[in-house]
Image 1 (cartoon, helix red, strand yellow):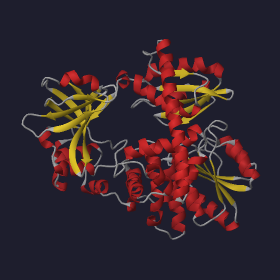
Image 2 (image 1 turned 180 degrees about the horizontal axis):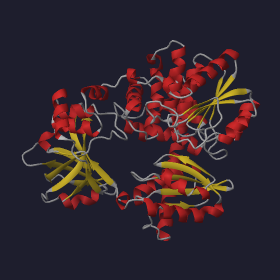
Image 3 (image 1 turned 45 degrees about the horizontal axis):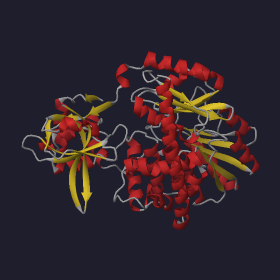
Image 4 (image 1 turned 120 degrees about the horizontal axis):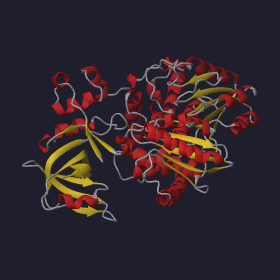
Length: 563
């Protein structure tokens, strides 16, 4: 692991913020590192408000989208809400469909089949709309590059409203409205919304026309927070506001579908991390193993008993998904070892019988293992389909653009993408991608980095610091849980391995005459010898609170240690 200590902000800025907020140097430093330099910015950060949300009509084409939906409602048209099969897509479809149905009955949903139709808007979906007399389709979390599909729909007199957050190509589809804050001609103040976030802006605009306030939309925020967590978008600006209030809904009064998913979780208060690891994989499992329709059925169900039946089925899918992803990861690792590709700059693997629904997870696992930009291919019909994952600070989407001549289609973000290609082009693509990565990646990016916010001593860890750190939540990209480094610490003799294979490390640490803290290092079991016999060491860690039998204690979550 590569430890990188963030540069200290200018002393004058830190002192100014310290005085304005009456806080200590550590908190002032953390705030400035996050771009918060004034009293007003700090107030917005520590006290997010729904009033901080931007006017939805600042988004290009929002007026056209709302006008078209209002016309459809006046004329009694059938509206089809269409979205991708992942968490962002299914939550977005559930959000917009359930809001529209609250006052208009002629609304149905459509999730494409991952295996039969693939990602995004499908011709089959448009044919379904025509056969069932839908004259308006609202597409969520997809569509920004669907030029031909929208033309196909136009020829059938079916209108499209696109709500997407992916990067547009040079040409926009000829839809009635294209809502995407990443449009170059869109001056919306915040462009990091997820697909469900763009869907939320649409219902916010519709709500304004119906004289509803933002308070009327709070019950929908559990869906938005789930999508924000799952799609790994920055927890800044509007996303931070939506995530905070959405988490409050999840913890206090979630919709029956989410309640059914979390009712066996023993934690009192769920965080964004819990949403990522508990709720999101289960919603995703429906589209990965069976069909994304099951996720929408769960998330739009208002009867708890029925929601529990849906949730138990999804739980089964999730168990299957875990088995598949474990098996395929083992096969992929063996392929890399056998072909002696561990030292490559990229990881590209293919096996025709790998389950398409889990190759994205396998790509993430391989990225964790070798820390290389990774692509996992499988057979899909007469083509190969793949999921790509990247390492920190390397734009895999740009890398794919340089290899576009080998691809049938591709789309995604800086850190994750999907693509298809013809089987005969696989080896040429693999070679081209490896060459592109080798020529463009900085060697440091191939070593996992721990970004350290500040160096502190144990005496700095006090109730006030912890109370303020808790107010930095919700954590996520661009607002990660603060990581500290402390030097010259020792275990007090309690260090021991934990876990089935002794893979984790539990210890009790002290620094000089300071108060001691319990510490746990997940995956650090192999470093036990470094801390025995009172060997001094330094550690990088996050500060957590543990609650047991009503007692709250401080625990350090070690990320790494060295002598």
